Amino acid sequence: MFRVRPFCRFTVLAVVLTSSLAACGWNRKAEPPPSGETFGAGDTYSRTYLVPPAMACEATRRALLGQGYVISKSAPDALEATKSFQPESDVHTQLNVRSTCLPQPGGGSIVFVNAVQDRYVLNTTVKSASVGVSMLGSVSLPIGSSGANLVRVASNTVQNQDFYRRFFELVAYYVPSTEGLAPPPPPPVFEPLPDPEPPVPTPIAPSLLDEASDPPAGATDPS
Image 1 (cartoon, rainbow, N blue to C red):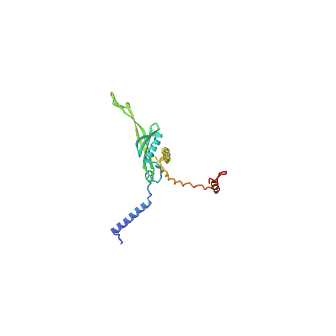
Image 2 (cartoon, rainbow, N blue to C red):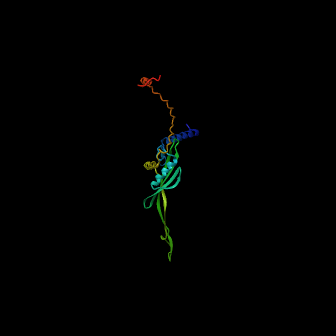
Image 3 (spheres, helix red, strand yellow):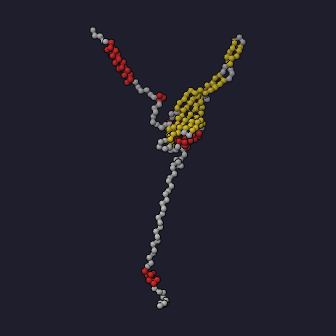
């Protein structure tokens, strides 16, 4: 009778497990990126301008102020602004916009913008008070002061490309013209004028010379 040695049985089991794991690995699909993040090469969150970073950030600040945002932090190369919305009576939304301005290697600057939308819900709490009643003891009744506070229930980064496109177009409106930022042209070179040539004498006609040598009519020879 043929018997399988323990070592051979262990080898066969290892081969079966390896084959099973390999088959599972081949059939496993690639997991999608978290929250749809792909790190694409698009320019949704940035634009370039032909001005220094300080001027680009100043244009960004004016664009936000013109739309009702409140500047909470401001620096020559970065700023942060907020704007509040209330779509419903018990829902409060706040939009936080952060911008960073960096110099471009080839000249000009690049502006990065990121907007985060926070959603708050009004939470109302009523403080109960205990009232002593004879034969019943202490009874808690909903009387007294009440308080309300906002509780953040959601926070997400705005990914709407049209939102950022309109924002950057408004920033470009406030960017100063690049004509005044161009280096001034070099001063013109005035070359010295050549020395004027001496005037050429006008030749006298021979007939005029003969007339000049002849004595006038009626004149006598002094000799």
